[in-house]
Length: 294
Image 1 (tube, one colour):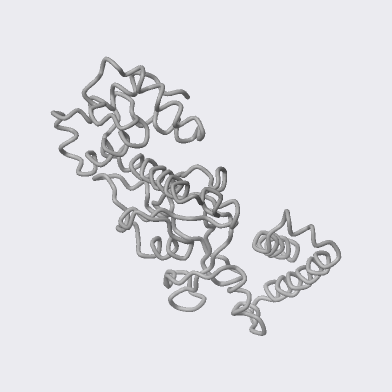
Image 2 (cartoon, rainbow, N blue to C red; image 1 turned 90 degrees about the vertical axis):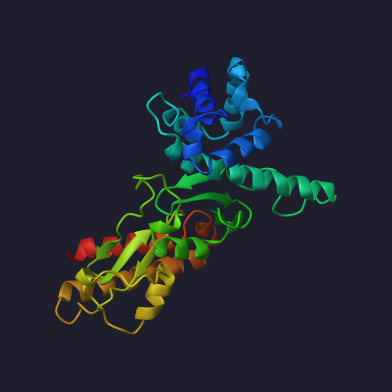
């Protein structure tokens, strides 16, 4: 879905200097300034030139072309009946993240270090919004990790910071009145592990204890573990359900045996780790073991 001139005119109407809508959204001024700097080549008066909407459309289309998801979202949120607050809440972090990346690249080039790790072209994916975390993220192809944009500090943070941000609750995210699109979905309960679990933006499973051990109705305690950490905590300890549920005990035993077999396969052919991660393998094997036993 391509950006149309009408989408741009709607944006210019919202953000014009005398617009009552602009004055009602506190972060609208910041968006006007950042769009001027990042997309419109320093044109600080771009909102006051509706006759040049086609040119601004072309500039936005070119800038958004590297991520079709962003382009589709831009179009969807600038329709005639759209809301400026919702649009700014989504789009300002995207523009700010791009501005931060560009500034870092320019700084490195100015210092003669354009080839330093972290600024080379293609290292990072295009920033995208994760509604579960309520944050903008990017993927570092060189380090193999996700980074998350801290809007208050205007800097990129690691996965641990993002998990803590999510654990603190959706109130940590700036939202338009009545907009609950960034609320994190409820974690699910794993009956065999007797723990809550969720899947992060990278596809890895995370686990949390119940406030009352083994009791899903008590809710989760807010401390999340990777799957490796969760397994390490239970090594040598039977699952709570094993004493009363022979299926759970058998599933655990089968799961461990399958993990050992996979470990042997990795030793025989290390290249398997190039396409399979430990988290994915353990999650799949746990599910297979459970299904086979039951």
